[in-house]
Image (cartoon, rainbow, N blue to C red; front, side, top):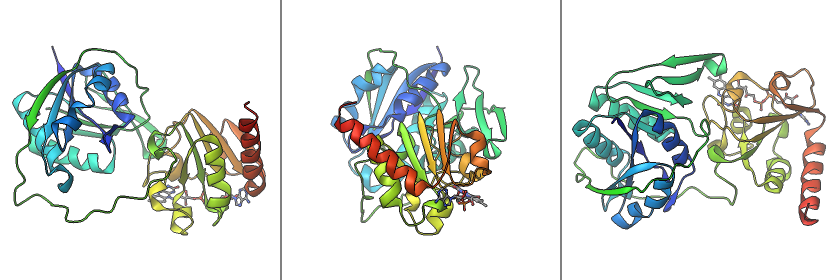
Length: 319
Ligand SMILES: Cc1cc2nc3c(=O)[nH]c(=O)nc-3n(C[C@H](O)[C@H](O)[C@H](O)COP(=O)(O)OP(=O)(O)OC[C@H]3O[C@@H](n4cnc5c(N)ncnc54)[C@H](O)[C@@H]3O)c2cc1C
């Protein structure tokens, strides 16, 4: 029976929603071994039930006490050791860190890496949307192929099994490893994480420096994450961590609302798989309207606050 390794995404002892998507996609390739890399066995074991619920038959608990002081190498070491000993494809979430892990793993294993894919097929081929969404391709690679799957491109579907835990001790750090000597966590907001949010409200240059007055209140009324275009980020209107697009995050929410965004291909390539797209722009000829499910022509500075106020009013009235 063929099998496949999935690198479990978790943060602050919480499983990230993308993990369910990874396991769902990986099931097409065989029996899933979920690989948790964590600081101790208790943390690693805490995910067993949830991972089993998505169909992981085995949970490899790869632990190292100094895990949080090391960057990338624990994951590479664990997956390399597993796949070298018992070859199988490896599936990771497509994040900047994991694309780095994928490259190192592919080099160590002498295998191909298929990165930023949005689907994995039972024959091992992967589906990509490339050149800003202009083409769809199918690619294959050889060896213990390493895939990075874009968050939000697959719907997580439970398939409950009982996950068998398999402890695994990570090799100690060597002189070649990077060691983190100090660490400042990124500031967290109460909003959902951008790449896995079900609703995203994004602002562009048209918002100007009014993100806190216009974009954030609408996002909060909807329980949404906030995103931004590169031009808005470059102008200093919003934090670069929230940039969506070719050189930013890829999002695929159920609802995407774009405020004051023209719809350049470098932006749309990072959000075009959103289920419903609402565009608010004062210029009806902007290209963003071509991919909108609902287009609103008007001044975002009037429309967004009015929408946020109406949503809040209805919420308070219990509708
Ligand atoms: C290599 C490369 C990589 C890139 N990567 C990215 C990327 O990852 N993400 C990204 O977003 N871009 C990226 N870009 C930039 C991209 O090409 C566009 O320049 C950018 O997306 C435009 O941002 P924008 O829509 O906010 O600004 P603009 O194109 O200036 O659009 C602003 C819009 O706001 C509207 N507007 C203004 N005032 C109002 C108002 N009061 N009410 C309603 N509408 C209003 C205007 O009509 C206009 O359509 C990249 C470019 C390059 C070359």
